[in-house]
Length: 125
Image 1: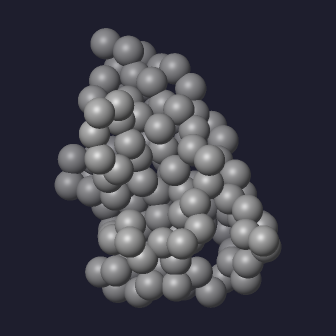
Image 2: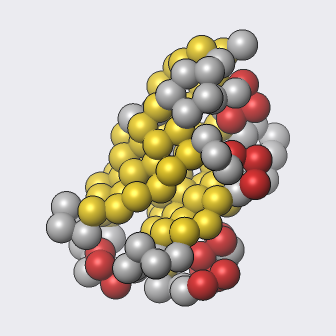
């Protein structure tokens, strides 16, 4: 059974930083691309960042480019999302997810079967 557990969310002031962590278990982590998505109240789930199994392809949502960095540790079966210069509009529940998709498919939430429970990120103005 695949388990994805996010941590690192919280309340920060605008301009602050957070580092989200997703610990994976129950899958051969090194074979999966990993993605971060977010969902704000009343809005659809949105792709934030994705990283291929071999760190070769990395994708970011345009609204956060330059402020976020996704990385992974295939030994620790963990994926990270470093978020800097946070804005109130970044407030959402952030989810990590695993997929066997490659290339542009990493951006598509329909390609992901396994999801974590989410971690709340709240940015105050």
